[in-house]
Image 1 (cartoon, rainbow, N blue to C red):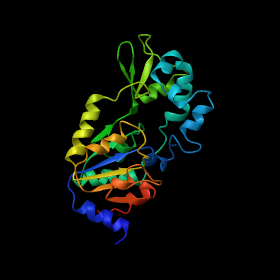
Image 2: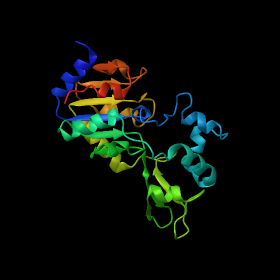
Image 3: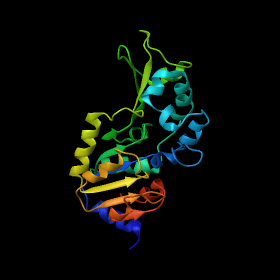
Length: 241
């Protein structure tokens, strides 16, 4: 039995599937990942700062002009569409098979594909707020302002994305952990499982159907019940409805 058939059999016998995904889920939509050649980390180096510096809370507060120049050019991407991976996961949810998507991505593509139960660990480009009065702003309002976006009250607007030195949202993290603990199948895809605390969420899974789908090896491969080294969209597009 080939691996796709094994995956389909696992899905057919499951009723509480959770998907944990990383940057590789969105690369097939044309969004760069972070660590590969030509990815976000390469672009950041052109600014003369390490990624952990430019994308940190301290840097954002001290040099918002440089931060926003990078952010708007490389992270604030809205002219993309869901790929087969996003669509397949949304369909699994509609069929009552999948209970939650837990994502490290900030692009909103899971929701665009129709997924409702989405836990965005690192926030979203579609949520922005004034650091002074906490008024909410749309992504369009950020794009419309040149340079640093400011609120009507004069406060600086911050994207609701998690920067280095910032903790994950507790409500989002608790929700993700709860769903993973209750899952009878955990599919992990498009992530190298090297970024914590997201990678550590696998430790909360108690079931016997752990599936890892990634182009390259991960530190958790030896713990998985099924490992598929391929593009996540290509794999999930072969799921039987």
